[in-house]
Length: 332
Ligand code: TRP
Ligand code: SF4
Image (cartoon, rainbow, N blue to C red; front, side, top):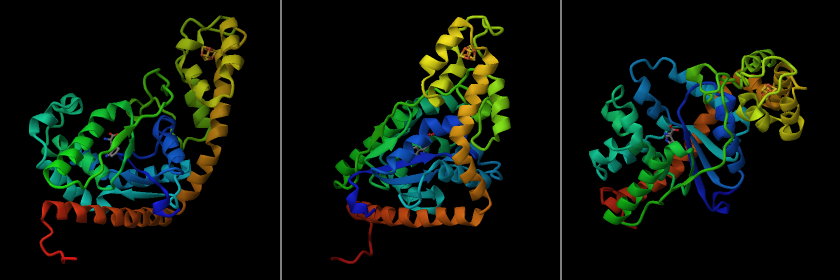
């Protein structure tokens, strides 16, 4: 589709955390896959952001980029519809970050909850500037919308504020972005906490059917329901939350039998893992194909970077003009 046919631009970003799990998929990626049909979309693997945490030992980052790109593609992000690229392939992110850093005070950054939470372990200049780099990621593409979770609300607000500040200081140049919040299902891990690789309670997309079944069997359930026949409460059970995402009519097909005791937890979990495996099968098949062709995946990222750069260069050209720092630009 030609760029002009799509009215609005989306920039979405994710830190390269390696192979994804179903929580990442249902929480963000499935939404991106839907959005790529209606927006001009840039999907950025933010490797420089990842360095704020892993700057000392960077050995894993390349594999993490690769595996995440594979899962993005397997999940249905289409390189024909959106530019899929690595942040550090487009150096303009760093340039706009630097220019933005003049427009924001240090206390504004130190007050942010994301900084406060981690400042004792991460107190580098780079970490302080994390949201400024994120603002640059967004404004560099003149993105109107940024699909994020609620935890990122302040960062998007800050990006809009920086765009506004830039426009007021120099000349109206940048688009003020907005967060695009979407309903995402609650995705609990097997310990009933939020699903996360760092808790090792997750279900990776790359799992086999058997591994998935084993993980599902290990899930926490209603502790009062010890054996089949005991009545259970699906409303407090993480397995039921996943049924809500993966089964067609869980309120009718799972909940009453759980409450009455007719359904035992073992069968309930088998039912869930069967549904989950069915849903993930096409993604897993595509994934298995993609990992066999690593060069094609790196090529897709390079082509994506080329497309991203075209947009980024044109925005930066306007930014430099607005600031009167495009010293050698020919007069038109
Ligand atoms: N901070 C985001 C997160 O932790 C990642 C991110 C970096 C991002 N740059 C972005 C998200 C730009 C959206 C847009 O999830
Ligand atoms: Fe949870 Fe299913 Fe057991 Fe009910 S039957 S407690 S929903 S695992």
